[in-house]
Image 1: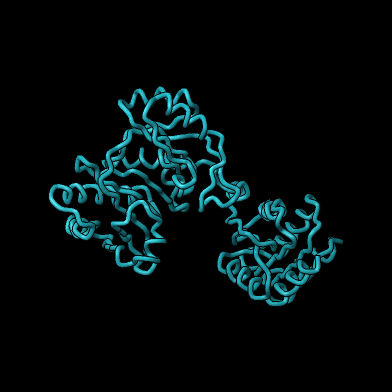
Image 2: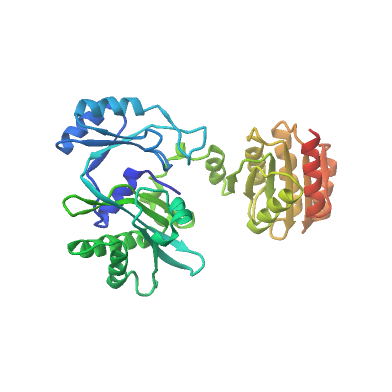
Length: 388
């Protein structure tokens, strides 16, 4: 789950991390009034979407008068902002953040992520703030510093000072960096984050550290422990099919291919996508119906797949253990009856009640192609899509 920048900064304030004063606004008049309340300009008006690169796309602008704030906000609201992370379709701006400007002397980069290699939280820092970290890693990897955190001890002051020195900080800024870094770590742990990125963390002309931008990623499996965070979710920023899938406890991720996949088990779903690619196809989604899916859940999964206009064929790959093959078969038949099925459908069933599952499919009267094994299923759906 992701949140907007203004929400991220509100969380950081709670943990004592310094951020600029600002307020989210939904129209030009409100933006002007809040600019006046924030004090003397200049101010920065920032489009709020779940994507980076907003400045390059015209989503971050400086205003020197309150009337200019209103004009910029009016121009931004309703615009389709396109960045390298939104894709060519872009995202519609429905809110802007108006905040105080600051005198930037230098820009740094700091993030906390879960390192799957060490199974620990790792702090990443760089002197190249304001740039995409992927670009820095590719061109100047020596400018990225990392520090792995012992979960039993937490991020120590010694580690924070080590990071500060690596960033070239000295004097009072070192102690300020220790405070900021430990505040970020406390935020990360307390909120069950999967990623927390500050880009840039700026040094102001007054020798203060300020988190000028903030991006959070949360562990979806832990959101239930944080009702306030769950309320911050902006469904308009998410794929409608993914939102719909979450309402039915389905694990679904949209992809760019044309072969829909309905599978039980995350590992089998990954293997299914791999074998489709192996035989020259392109999966349209990852969809795991789970080990204990009901007929209703399978039916909804089928509807979600078919709602993707790019889907030109569907592969159902089920290994029945907890999830019985006859339940999957019944769900497939029910969904096909409720939704106009006008694309090829290949079904591979193995496991518990497989014989009964195949009988249900055969007796349905639907145009379903049976497959024996994953390789056979992948080849058949790829051939069927190519033939369309």
